Length: 56
Image (cartoon, rainbow, N blue to C red):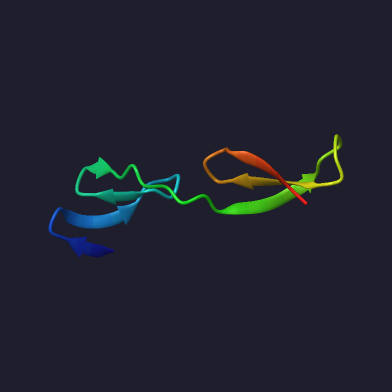
């Protein structure tokens, strides 16, 4: 746990930074490969927040 002028910094269950009692609006997508896209020659990548993107 880190500290800032707004209070302690922890991580919410979905990976967002929580300063004090408020969750931060900043979110960095961390995509991991989850499988092949059946409609193209690419792969599917999913972030821990639920966003899914295709890759080549």
